[in-house]
Image (cartoon, rainbow, N blue to C red; front, side, top):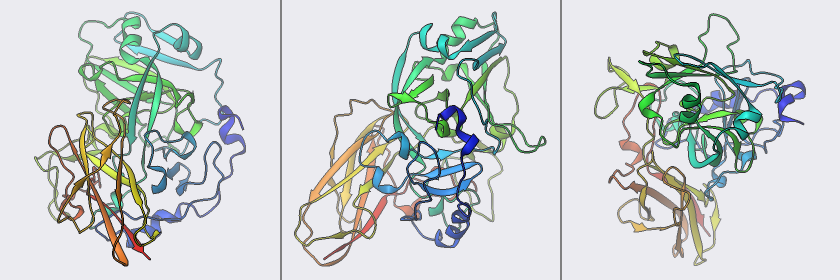
Length: 401
């Protein structure tokens, strides 16, 4: 099936959305809900993934995928906000409109994007702000993601700044509003538009048409999407179709009310005492995840076990990953990869040991970045009403036989 005709024949199994509901009770734990079943393989360009909804598509990557620096396109998580996604995209007629406070309004075709600008690549982690939401107690509303609402890819495209330079900014221009092609089901529902300040546009902020050497999968934003490394995915607009330059901040629902945390030092509050002021979630915090072994894995006594996983943050860079086999009393450093993919990408880690005692064993992983920020124990992660930015120490429980 061609990605441009994705929804013409896509039929998704009924009942997929129920998974999110049934996970609510199970989520009353200190760690994200894990080992959930995969959905039916009814999504083009995707292998079976953990399925929360088919309209809009909400798909989570299973834990075992997180052992490599780049996440395969067909196992990359999917998060849409609006149910009305275009059913057909004509690559030849598709354009990105650039208007507002510019000297020259533009309509850039895909061919022009690929041939008329300098082409750049950046490896970066894409993560939903609500990733691991199911770990919070009590559980906030929203998609009850486990650990897999994230992925890392090599994105290829054009710097957003180069496109704005081509249009020419008028004096006083400061804010960039970015909009995709997804639409709400009802006209009263606000559209999904994000704004960036000009100061945020460094060389890593690009409009990408390629992901891991291939055209973007339809469900991940084909034909183009915005890439804002180090930030959560709410800013990474999919099916980007319009860029509007403004002289002031435009008050929009998804900027002013959604994807926000308490505006205090701990970014926290309690269910019975919500903090009155909020701020955007913005930069990702430090996090790690064990990809193998997975929960419930049976490992042989005195066998050679290699724990593998990934770690990342908002761009400061990972300094170390540590592993504990005794409930966090002692820690040993894991081996990190060479970091050649850059500071916005996953750093993979490996840790070898031989289990010497039969029975249950907890394997913990925690990352520390170059700013000295370290993952806290899961029970020490402070609560917020949106269930955002959970980054508790990862724990996998295996059985030694």
